[in-house]
Image (cartoon, rainbow, N blue to C red; front, side, top):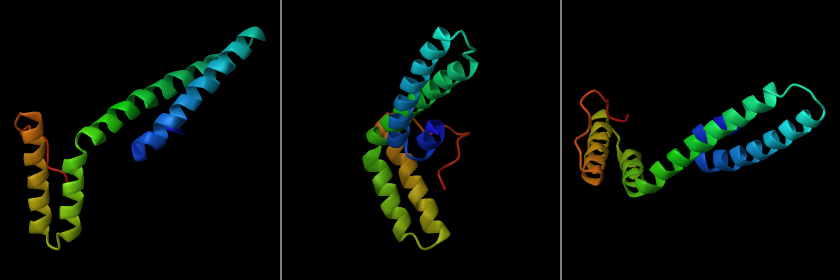
Length: 112
């Protein structure tokens, strides 16, 4: 669940992944005491850790590029034609280039 939320709402995914890691570690300890298999709990720790790392990266990206993403969303709201939407995508690409200091990669398509 944490991984799914991380892809949709990164902050919620972060909270869920921390919760899942804590619960999975608790389960591993309990299962070890009872001498039962810990495969599922170990998988939960790995998957929750992956969701946590992905959530941190995604949240950091959103925070770092918040001004550019907000400008893009506002531009898209007012874009009534395909040409205007493409112009919004071009503006977003140029804003990323200015902030990062590198050119947009040639093989990466513009956001739609």
